[in-house]
Length: 216
Image: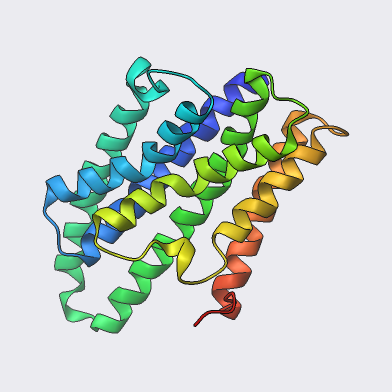
């Protein structure tokens, strides 16, 4: 498998993961299936749209190749159905248990999507020709990772997650910076694996130990 195929696989993984996280937020807000699809798709492709606009790629890739939107919509519909079944089966469980399960699914999906899209964003900037501009590469990687989540939270009427808790943007920044410097010394595949691992590990540690940046 060449690196282009790996990047495509990461985009699909990120799309699915972020679509699921969007549906979970829609579930918390008791939205209908249309709301779930809107939130899921906004989360899944929002960061990529911002990435493409920054890099001067118009129209954005989601309009050139509908596969990402199709994957996002199908994921949203399937997850909506699964969550409806879970709700019915879980009526005998405590609300606390259901909330814990929901939070776990959201955190895992969000972390995997973030890690995948940080790498995809960094690589997109490199492919355009900004190989030596580490600031731009890192910025595009971070924006690709967090952009969809910002759209999701704003549409759901919430303060974006990156501004309120659990070391989210910092994990993306760490992953992007590591990817930039790792590609100078190691293969793209190894750099991608290390970068994603760093993002996921930081996110999971922050969730488990309840790490937060100083706040008011």
